[in-house]
Structure formats: C-alpha cells, structure tokens
Image (cartoon, rainbow, N blue to C red; front, side, top):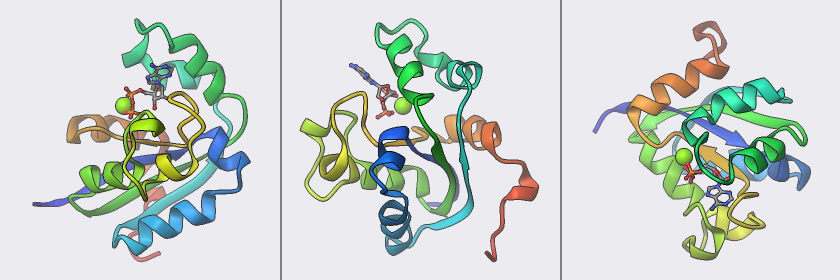
Length: 142
Ligand code: ADP
Ligand code: MG
C-alpha cells in the first residue's frame, strides 16, 4: 500500500444539510488527512467538464443541474490507501445499497443527491485533484 491523494466533494445537498463538519470529522477520525479544503459554487461549464466521463449517461443533465444548485466543498484527502478508504467511508452510490455507518447511508437522499464524491482510481484522482487544487494550495502540515 502507498500514500495516496484523492479528491472529495461534499455535494450541494451535503452543504445544504450542514454536513461539512461531520464529514470532515469522519475523514480525520479514519486517519486520513485533509490537505486542501475550499468552498466553491461550480459553473455549468465546470460541472459538465468534471463529469464529462458520464456525458453519455441518461442522468448527465440532471447530475450537472444538481451539482450547480448550490455551493460545494472540495477536499484533497491524503493517506495510506486513501482512494479506497475514502470511498469506503462514502458508501455505495445508491444510499439504499450503502452499508450501515457510511456517509451515503446516513445522509444521502437518493442515488443522485448522494452527498459526496470520491475519485474512483489513482488515474481518476490524478486528474480530479488538479481540477480543483494547485499544488501551492495543498498543505501537508496544516
Ligand atoms: P460514484 O459517485 O459512486 O462514483 P458514479 O461515478 O457512477 O458514482 O456516478 C456519478 C454520480 O452520478 C453519482 O454519485 C450520482 O450523483 C449520479 N448518478 C449515478 N448513477 C445515477 C443514476 N442511476 N441516476 C441518477 N444519478 C446517478
Ligand atoms: Mg464515480
């Protein structure tokens, strides 16, 4: 196993439900480190670009609309095996199928408004972290 860097997003439903503190706390209690953190409100162009991989999916338009509905929190998360471990904390895409104690099981409304995003592989993380953070915005002794 290696130290990995991954992207997390607290989606508009999570910010609206005042879950930023709870979610950051779960990440840190799991032993992962938040080395970048900021609030932003995605433009339509940014949301379309971020989710370009899903362009052909029937839910793409709705997903983009949802993601620009309100502000999001973007997080750069680092630690041993961080990519898989952050996705474990998140739970399955569909909250109805998510394991007990996961963020999506505890807080998500449905398969679309599912509270959090996490990079799904090292290759994805290598694109998604720089999408939101310059290297000068990552702080390992923060
Ligand atoms: P994950 O976020 O778990 O990696 P995907 O990459 O498959 O899931 O999908 C990206 C996002 O698109 C999901 O988090 C969710 O917000 C939305 N989504 C996925 N599947 C559906 C669906 N069947 N209907 C509506 N929205 C969906
Ligand atoms: Mg995904």
